[in-house]
Image (cartoon, rainbow, N blue to C red; front, side):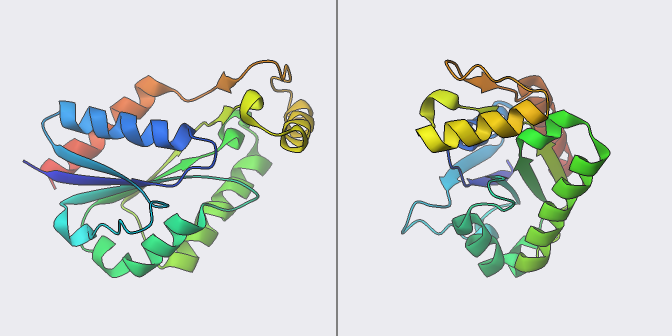
Length: 181
């Protein structure tokens, strides 16, 4: 039985939900999977204890969570020795705009350059607009950004754009890749 680590960083909670879905899918496929919040201090899982690692983080202000960046940088050598995936969660995935796609690719490339990590696969995943969780300033700012992109601007509700079926398919495919290198 293959052992997987799903390490994540989250700002508003959606990436934690995505990490949980990855872990649940891997477990359902017969793998042993642990899900760990990179921001949970005192819990520094060693990737050498796992056959494969998935790291999930969300884009905020053109970067990812610092705790994820620190963990990946500290374990880059061990990550290079096993199959790994980087799940990049971002609303910009929805735009299907070449300029936005280039900007997102630069954010991912910058993260990978800073950490020295070369994941086996990078999976972009659409995020969410959690208007009801945002403070006034963030709600106002997000609404303006989303309005320019032609997105949902009703701040009385939240919007989840993650394609859960695609995410589960990705987890199954990554599991198969680990089993059949």
